[in-house]
Length: 113
Ligand code: HEC
Image (tube, rainbow, N blue to C red; front, side, top):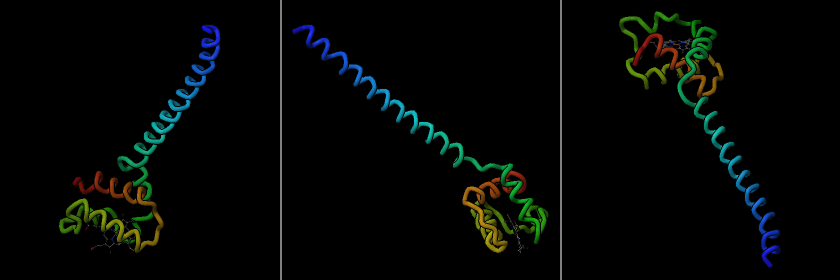
């Protein structure tokens, strides 16, 4: 009787452990996804913003537009609006995070909001 219970018990225990491993791996996987998401959706990539900006944004005005006395942009929200406005006029198709990179670059380099 005892022997029967014990032999029945072992595979069950192993099954349970495999199950737990699978759950742990799933949690770990979710953790990795969350990490990647945090890394890509977090702070703006200033270097990328700088690159995009010098590729596309110096055709109508140079950076003097951002530092002149009577500049139009007075806060971060306005900076976002203006960048999107200019981007749409220019006709480049940037993803939202690329727009954010350029906004981040302009803010760090010129506006300091
Ligand atoms: C088609 C021409 C054109 C292109 C290309 C262009 N801009 Fe502009 N931009 C303008 C004009 C016009 C103004 C307004 C200047 C004024 O009012 O004196 C302006 C103003 C700005 C301002 C506000 C400056 C201030 O007064 O504080 C920002 C910021 C700006 N542009 C960012 C960008 C970015 C980023 C890009 C690249 C996506 C870009 N621009 C490309 C035409 C352009």
